[in-house]
Image (cartoon, rainbow, N blue to C red; front, side, top):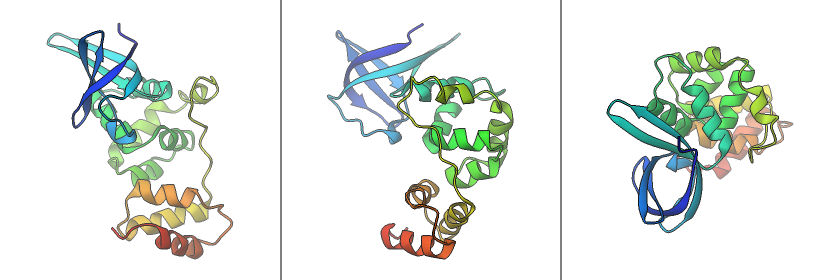
Length: 195
């Protein structure tokens, strides 16, 4: 089992990269959209190897917590590695963590664009399995902050106006939550580019 790869990126594709290690190029499927990766970058990827009758694939992640979530997603019935990777492309680990802890699939669905049925399946399947990930001290990620009801309302309003869920969340979470929903929306609209 290959658990990590360290080397130089030689090729970047739509959903994978090639990392060269001592003259051997390994194709690794990864959530490229989350990281500003470029050819010639030196990377250390935490990996999961998928071995099937006619498949030998590697999935890799910059942060070990992303790998842990990827492997947790694989425990969900009928959810394969490509689907798990797609979920991690749509929702970051912090959003997944918060939605699962709060048992709130609607929150995950609204902010990530993940289908409602899939979001419900993720939350119900992973309930009670994720808290240790943020207590281990091994991750660079921080535990999620709980959004206030005014922040959630502001995010929902921005999504209704056509803004990207992740972008809306990013702008609103920077605000303290002390303002009312209308003020938050107005402040965000001053900063977010028009969709």
